[in-house]
Length: 201
Image (cartoon, rainbow, N blue to C red; front, side, top):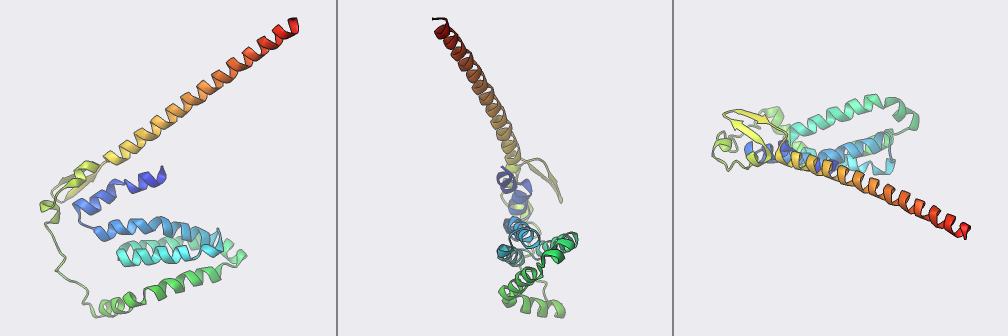
C-alpha cells in the first residue's frame, strides 16, 4: 500500500504533466533505494552498501537538486547514527558506497565540475517557459489545479482511490473476521450440544 501511494503521489503527476520536470519525477524512483541503502549502511546489513551507491547514482544522473537533498539526508542520518557507526565500525561500508558512487559517475562529474567552475552551465535550449500553458494538462486527473504560475496540490484522485481501497479492505477484512468468529462460536456450541446428547444417551 505504501508503494502504491508513493507511486501515485500527485507531485509525480505534476512534475511530469504540468511542469515538464521529467528528471525530477525520475529521481523519485531512486529515493526509496537511497533510504534503504542508507539504513543498511548505518544500521542494517552491511553487505547491502551497494544500494546506497546505486540510489545516489540514480539521483545524480536524473536530478542534481534531488542528489543534494540526498547528500544532506545522508549527512543528517550519519550524525544521528554516529555512535552506532563508531561502535560497530561501519566506516568501511560508508567509504565503499561513497567511492563506488564517485567512480560510477566520474564521466559526468568531471565535465560538470569543469563547466560549473567556468560558469557555462546555463543553456536556454530547454527553457520552455510556456510548457505548462500549451501542454496537454493530464495533471487535472490527479487533482492538480493550475492557475497561472500557481500550482495548488490537492490529495489527488490516485490518493483518494488508494485510501478508499484501504478503507474497503479494512472493513471487509473486519467483517470476515467477525463472521469467522461467529462460525467458530456456533460450531463450538453445536459440538457441546452433541457431546451432551451423546453423554445423555
